[in-house]
Length: 241
Image 1 (cartoon, rainbow, N blue to C red):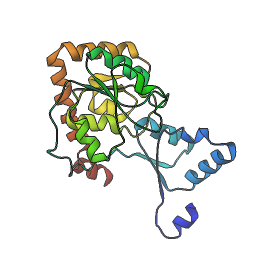
Image 2 (cartoon, rainbow, N blue to C red):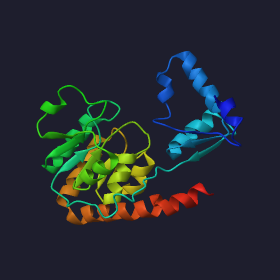
Image 3 (cartoon, one colour):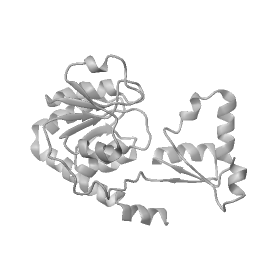
Image 4 (cartoon, rainbow, N blue to C red):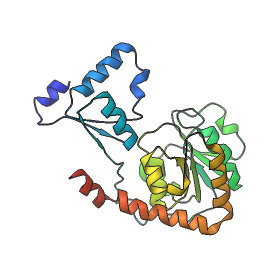
C-alpha cells in the first residue's frame, strides 16, 4: 500500500488515529504488518508529545511531529448558547473513556449530569441516577449543545486526539482531565491531573464549585490558551514550519 502511494507522491506520512498502542490489540501478524507499514512511511504525525516519544522509540531516525488537533469553527463562531447549571462528562462507562470516575467526580457539582452516547455505552447507563445522555449529534449540533454546560469532567485514561478538552476550551468550559493529553494540559493547565488521581480531581471539582474567582480564571484562561495554541492561524504557522 505504501509502495503504491509513493509511486504517485513525493512524500507519504502516517497520521495517527486513536491511542498509539491501538495496534497492540491486533493479532501478531497484523501487528508486524502495521509496524512495517509505518516503517515504510517518510514521516509520522502524532497527536501528543508523548506519542512522538513512542514513535521515535519504535522508529529511530524517522521524522515524527506532533500534529495539533484542529477545529474549523466557521459554523459555530458566535453560536454559543447560554451557560446553564449542568455538568457534562466526556464519555461512557468503559475503560476507554473512564466514565465511571468522571460521573463520580461530576456529582460534586450537585447539578444534572450529562454524557454522550457512543459505541462504548454500557447497558444500564440510562438507569443511573442523575445521568442523562445526548444522542449522537452532528459536530455542529454537538458544539451548540456543549456550549450550554457550566462544568466538564473527562477522566479518560486513553490518550488520543483530545477533542473533548479542546471543544470545552473553545467555549471556556473548565474541564478536569488527563494531563497526558496535550489539549487538556495546554488549555486547562490548572485542571489537569494524573490519569488515576481521582482524589485531586475531586479537590479541583470542589474548588470550581465553591470559588467563583478560580472558576472564572480557569474559564477565561482556557479560551485564551485555545486562541493562542489552537486557532487556525497558529495551526497554519506550525504546519508550515
